[in-house]
Each structure stands twice: as structure tokens, then as C-alpha cells.
Length: 465
Image (cartoon, rainbow, N blue to C red; front, side, top):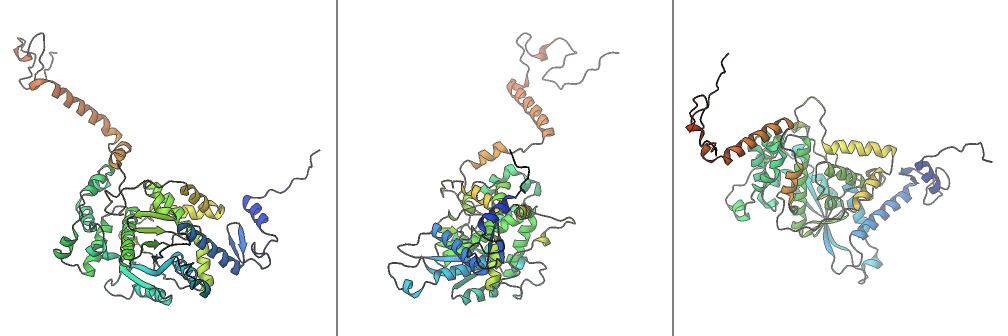
């Protein structure tokens, strides 16, 4: 006989919280202190939360690079000024500060030899841009003071220096800007012409760029950068171009600092947003490299993401508990480039709103998206041909693949085009424009005066009433 008393239904989050916590409201680690922080389905007190986050960071770093190494390498930390990259610097400092008994042990050398910090100043893109020539709104000095506080070497560059030939490997961003600003918008929006446009970008040699071309002033480089962003028709295109610029400058900063490893502060939330974004814009080929823990996408420089398992909420809390200084204006606002009354959102911003909103009701959303994308196998890359923008290898047969999946003709124009092509084919089959009838010879020799010949202009004959 079944019991008639119905047990209250519990959600998945409530079941997991009940299994983890011994008593409601207490830390799931020490089980004695009152919980103050809730992450996903777990509750922590402040000390246990810091230990758990540091453990995630060390585990990811161990998976990216084993502890026992023969020769330690130099690592460059990319610092934008936000909570993720700020937590990256602090966690690296805690990890690299070995106890005296371990530091003097020759059998356990350090994983990294020297730690450097780099920063890209994007103050020229901030809104409102009153006086771009002054350094009052620059974020370079704030980033420098944070890096020197840890005793790390600092390397900085402005975003407009992408037009300086010494800061790019391919030295083709000037050609990109010229190509985009000179072509018509209908040519830029035609997706079938994109591979041909890239093939017209020919990198200039280093000697020609450095010796022949005059060096541009800062104001001229800012004007070129704004002209390029103004020529982009969508906000998604603007953000994509800026992301390519940042990646190229970060790689150059790492190489100048003689660092073979570049560490990015991408959190799990940022990686999940990037996975959906890259899938939406058709960049699935590079998705495993741009979202994985360890990537060898660029030659002579490995990219790691040690915070790939940490949520952005955890990193915000981590910075708050440790009192870490942030740079408030660390993201460029591109509103000045879009002249419209309605609210404009790019694919990245729409994806951000979607993931953030879904994660509030379903806390496992970010982890699920990241685990799903982690199953992708990075393709074997050859550097015979590199993309002039992202400096990554070009996928073989991409032009033929894009031609097969892209619709470049409207449905109404398809029938007209097919008819005109058939007429041209029939005209080519007839020699010398003659009908070449087998029975009566050429129609020009016909005795009937009412039949027009193919040698004379054909006129319409009106039948008698």
C-alpha cells in the first residue's frame, strides 16, 4: 500500500546544496563557519573560498604545464584592468612565491623564470574623447603602478600603434584599412568576396615599411583607426577588428619580452560567451584554439588560460576580498561609431546577455557550454599561409567551402540569371549566328518574304486583322 503523503519536490540546485552542506547556512568545506559566499550550488566562508579558488588556479596551471620542467620559461601576463586579469596577476604572485625551503631546492625548480606584465592602452577609443593627445585619460600609468607593485617588468603599448610597422608581424593593417575604406559598402557586405579581399592584402617587407614610409604621429594613427572602425558597417565587425588588433599586439609584446608563454585572464564565463559568439559568426575552425586551456595557434608563443574554470562572479569576489585595485575604464566604448537612435548590440553583447541571464536560473550553464566545447579536437595547422589579421593558419579549401554554403543571388534574380545563361549557351552553339537548317539551308535564302532571316534585323510582323 502506497503512502498518500506527497513529498515536496526539490529542484536540482536544492538537491545538490542539500548533499553538499551538513547544515544549512554553513561552509561546505570547513563545515563550522557560517557561509558568506554562494557559488553555483556550494556555500563557502571567506577563507575557504580563497583556498578553493587558488586550488582551481593551481590545477589549471598544472594541466597547462607540468611542475617538473628542465628549463623554466618566461611568461607574459596580459592585463586589461578588469577583475579577471587583476586576479590573474595576484594568483601568479602567490603561486610563484615559493617557500624558502622549496626555493633553495635544486630538485624542484620554478616553473616560470621571469614574470612580465603587459597592457594595451585603449584610451583613444573611450567616450567621450575630448582630447586624445593628452595623457590624462591614459590607463598606462595605472597599469604600470600595479605591475611594479609586484616587482614585475612592465610592457605597454597603445592600440593605435597597430599602424606602426614595428608592432605587427604581417605589417598589413595599413593595407586592411586602405582596402576597407576605399571599397564600396556593397562590396564589403558581399560574403562571397571576402576570401578575394584577403588575398589582395600583401604584407610589405620590413625594410620597405621602416625605411621608405614616414613615421606617423599619434594623432594620425588615431585618425586612421577611427576611419577603419567607421568604415565597418556593424558593431560586430568593429569588435572583431579590435580583438584582432589586441591579439597581434599581445603576441608582439610577449616576443619583445622574450616570453614564450602568454597568459590570458579569460574566465569560464568569458570562454562560454566566446564559444557561442565564434560559432555564430562562423569561426568554428579556430574555436578550439581560442577557448582551450593551452593553445599553440601562434608560432613561437603558447597561450594559456589558467582561469578557465573560474566564474567571473568568483573573480569579482576574489578581488573584493583581497582589496585589489582595478582600472575602471578598461573597456573601450564604441558607441561613438554607431549613429542610430535605437539601441545597438553586437553578437558578443547579445551572447553576453543570453549566457548571463540563463546562468541566473541554471547555474550549470557556463560549465556545460565549456565542457561541451572542450571535446572539440584542434585541427592540425600548417603555417604555409597565415591570416593577415589574426596571424593564425588559414584553413585549406576555405574558399571552395564558402562558395558552396553561401547564397550570393537573391531568389528573384535566380530565374532571370538562369534564363540569360541559357540564351547565351544557345547563341554559342549556333555557328556565325545562323540557324543552319539541314533541310532548307540558311533562312536568308528562303523565298518567303514574310520570314525574317538571321542575317537581317528581325522585326515583329503584325498579323492582318
